[in-house]
Length: 481
Image (cartoon, rainbow, N blue to C red; front, side, top):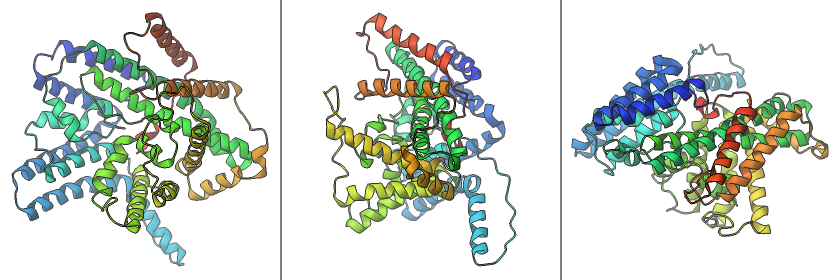
């Protein structure tokens, strides 16, 4: 079930009313209802994969209980290994089986040999990368004795399958989200209204910004060989806004929806396109994934404790694994590798932690230096997104070659002028509002002290934009991961 569908617009109010007015007397009944609603939400896409998420939840629930009682180091490591093997095994099979098989066959072909293989017609379960990492964090944190195992089966299953963030995050840690299922929730008007504002802002980013940009992006990437460098650059920039509007829009809707039910999820995006360097960008983009890799991969590898060689090794490891997490294609590995190269000069100069504050904090506009840094970082990120969006490595390099040609200085092709104009307008609104709100939790934070007329004018304008200027409906990009 997609957030931007009629089905969800019926599902959400119905679940909300039952949750607060029918099953609100007993927290266990509330959790059971949330679990049921989450399975309906997930099963709406393909009910056959409910068995997979139930099995994964069962495995980590039981392993968590065993880990909490086991004191022998060898046995504890064996239990953790079992959790890793099962969870990553399922993820590897569904997501990477055909990729590794094809790569194996291609390797034989390079040496002049032929190798017959049978590709499997595997459907990638929606959200498997997200809920797999969520259950793994639970087992790992119990192994590290950062938390104790829960004995509440329903609460744990509801934590794993919590419908607002089930299929595209944020990737919640058990230490943050799981305890919230054990506490009595009460309806808070201010929390709920702010959640609704965040949902509204997320819908605007998705259906107006991302879906309109997608029309232009699809046209450019499908015909890149015939287009000018200026058009290709514009296509890369539009894709940067498409993927941001799409993914951060999903996160906004997920976080806002969670607040309607009395839950607080972690912030997943912190206005990343206002970053002054690549390091700052990655502290602000998909925060739940980047911090997951930091805590469960980068630090265990040694983090920044060793010499420069170890720091470089660990940095490339985390970027390459992050790229591979996104999909079974060499383009994602290239995207990760390129971002690691971007990061390398900052690491070597030990300047990767210099921009930790909000840009132009307390000021209306950035300084000329900050403006240059923001534009430079955005362009570097946009060029890297070419690998993320392209079908093959060859396509990526040809696309970039086309950008850096003499036709870069020609007038770009606009295709559908109306959609192009809507895209430019919506991007401008996005940049303006998020710049003003860059120190806030999300783009539509408005206090009760804000004049009533101003607040409702903003709401009505956004609703009108959503209804009258929504682009052709596109599936959320991160559903494929």
